[in-house]
Structures are given as C-alpha cells and as structure tokens.
Amino acid sequence: MTQPNTFKIIAMDGGAAVGKSSTSRGLAERLNLMHVDTGAHYRTLTYALLRAGADPANPEKATAALAHLKLDTALEDRSAKLSIDGTVPADADIRSPEVNAAVSGFAALPPLRTFLFEYQRSQADIARAKGFDGLIMEGRDIGSVIFPDADHRFFLHADEATRSARRAQEGQTDSIATRDQMDTTRKTAPLICPEGAIKIDTAPRTLEEVIETITRIIQP
Ligand code: DC
Image (cartoon, rainbow, N blue to C red; front, side):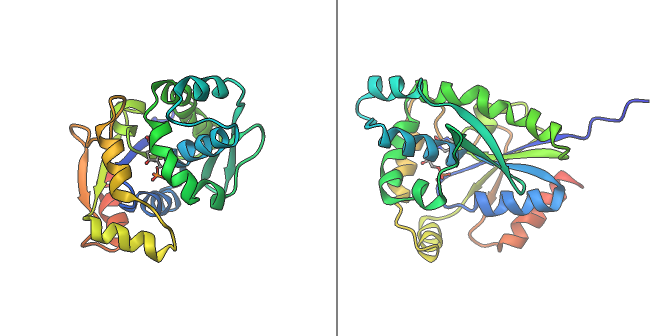
C-alpha cells in the first residue's frame, strides 16, 4: 500500500523584521520541516555581486556576473543555506550595512529573480530526499510566485515601531521602511499578501503565540 502524501509546503511571506525567520525556524523544529530563508539567498547573491564589483544601477554587469556563480545547498541543522562556489558566506557578511543597503536594488532585477526561481523550487526535492515532513520557505514572493501551490500560505506583518525595535535589539542597522517601500513597489514579484494567504499581526503576540497559532492551522 502506498503511504499517503503528508509532505507539506508552507509559504511564509512578509516585510522586513516582521518575525518570519524566528517563526519559520520554530515551526521547522516543531513540525520536522526543512527551513529555507530566501532573504538570505538575495543577501548571499548581493554579497557575491558587490564583491564582483557589480552595482544594482548597472543591471547588465550584475546579470553578466551571475553567470559565473555556482549555486549549491548546504544543510545546517534544519536550515538549507545557499552556497556560492562551495562556500556559505558568514551571517555577519550577508547582514552588513552594505548588503542591507544594496539588497533590495539587486532583488528588483528580473534576471536575478529568474536565476533563483528553479533553485528555490528545487528545495522541496531536497527536503523530501533528506526525510523531512515538509518545507517551510520564507520570503516576499513565496506564496505568490515560487510556491503558489503551497499547502499553507501565511503573511506576517507588524507596525514599524515594533519592527525597528526588533532590529535594534539584534544590534542591526537596517532601513526597514526604505527596503519595504522598494520591495513593495518593484515591478517583478513585489511584496504582497497573496490572495487566500492567512494574515497574522505579530506585534501583539509573543513568538510562541505566533508559532502556536500557525501550528493549530497546519495541524488542526
Ligand atoms: O528577509 P530579508 O529582510 O533578509 O530579505 C532581504 C531582501 O531580499 C529584501 O529586502 C527583499 C529581498 N527578498 C526578495 O526580494 N524576495 C524574497 N523572496 C526574499 C527576500
């Protein structure tokens, strides 16, 4: 008898610092899911492109530089990380003020998004092959573009003061409002709440409460 297909794909979208990563990691732990942070994909590419001398204002040079990058996946605990030319850059490098300032500009370039599309979709096969019960992928366009066919789609949001306070607590300098403005207004795959996604305000809830709310929806 064939086993029922219980493998689940969960899309977790939202703006900067709404709590996507902590929530996704917590859910991955609780539900035996593989976790993928696609914001880290854009950050990793931004880091590599800046090192190659590319600039978001010069799309031709950035697109040409992409052709030289070899993408792969490295599993660290439950999180699948993007490696470039065999290396996963350090967190401090992909979350630096330089990368924060350039990432939305690069992420708005259609060739860069196309470059990542198949790679991001292929993460579901890796999660299956590694024996996880599902995949949780966080980003801006997961429920709208990458996995519109996901089993569950969530959209997290919070007021700006709460989000800035969270980043400050992490010791990070981040222009949340500017990035959100660029991510929401770009032409390709803008940050939107996909139709049918469940919206959750994380400001009045603790992390545990958000994880609990979502777990009950996934496993009623
Ligand atoms: O989640 P984050 O703040 O680390 O994401 C960094 C940037 O990457 C964000 O400002 C926009 C871009 N991004 C994107 O365009 N699409 C995604 N699916 C994820 C992130």
